[in-house]
Image 1 (cartoon, one colour):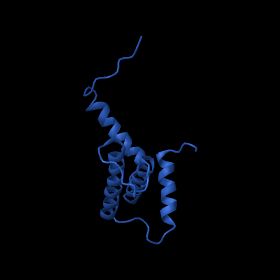
Image 2 (cartoon, rainbow, N blue to C red):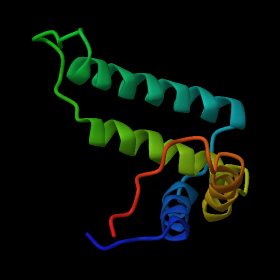
Image 3 (cartoon, rainbow, N blue to C red):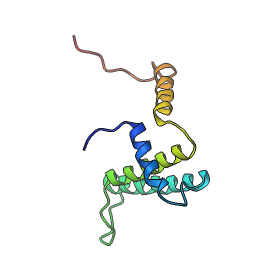
Image 4 (tube, rainbow, N blue to C red):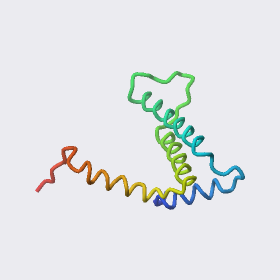
Amino acid sequence: MEERSLKDMQREVDAYISQFKEGYFSPLAMLARMTEELGELAREVNHHYGEKPKKDSEDERSMEQEMGDLFFVLICFANSLNINLDDALELVMEKFKTRDANRWTKIEEES
């Protein structure tokens, strides 16, 4: 699979959603969908790393699929609010590089 930028992903999702009359859900509905997808990811993480094994009757769903579902809804949410995810990531990375610059112990480079 070829690499795509966030901008490419946002365009791809927009092209997909734009083919339907209903378009994007409202912000509140989008947040509810995102919460639902996050819960499904949490359930998978709990099955793999927690103390709650899956029931025999439960489908095997991968964390990759659950993260993909969550990411799709996040892109939909950003698109519906005209938020450029490249810009959003740049803002948060700048925050971490400045505010949190000395918050954690850095791995020392070997000479």
